[in-house]
Amino acid sequence: MAPSGNATAVALGATHHMVGREAIVHFLTVDFPRMFVADVAVDFRGFYADGDVVVVEETMQATLADGNAYSNDYCFIFQLRDGLIHRVREYMDTAKGHRMVFGDAGGDRTDDH
Image (cartoon, rainbow, N blue to C red; front, side, top):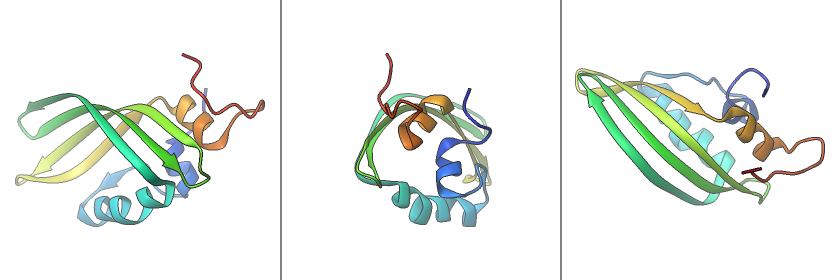
């Protein structure tokens, strides 16, 4: 099991909660590009909405700041307030994300599947 915290947040030394405009904009414009530096591609798997909640399933691939490849599945839950995004919750395979960002004892950053 991966250490506590989202691997992206751990690598960036950032919070794993994106609540409010300032936190969301900061993550998208400052933190995200520090970690995922090139070749970002998103394959959307599904969109689901109910009232003020939108769920997005996706697979993201990118090149990390150290030049290694990254690929992981995500589920984002967007909570809206007054028609605008207020909070973003991110779920992913944290063990795989941690392994791809930091490597493991054997230095392998690839997916076992």
